[in-house]
Image 1 (cartoon, one colour):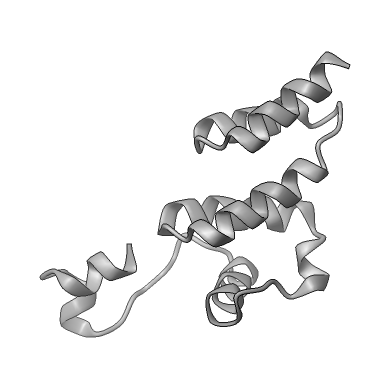
Image 2 (cartoon, rainbow, N blue to C red):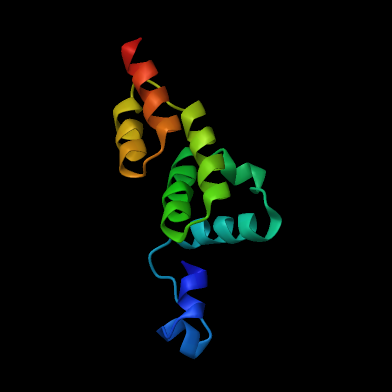
Length: 108
C-alpha cells in the first residue's frame, strides 16, 4: 500500500508524507517496530487484542510477515469463548490458520 502511494500521483507522493488516522497509536508503534526490526517488542506481543489489531493493520497495509506472525500468535490464544470471533476474523482476512484452529476448538 505504501509503495503504491509513492509510485503514483497520489497526495502522499506529492506531499512526501503519509497520514495514518485509522490505527491506534500503540498499534502503529508496534507495526513500525516490526517493519524496522523484523520482530515484535515482546511485552506487547502477548496482548491478544493488540495482536488482533496488528493482524488487521498488517492485512490492510500488505505487511505479510507481520500478518503471519500475528495469525500464529492469535491461533495460540483461541479458546472456546473466543473461537467464533477468531473464526470470523480468519474468514474476513482469508487466514486459514485462524479458521482451521477455531473449528478445531469448536469441535471439542
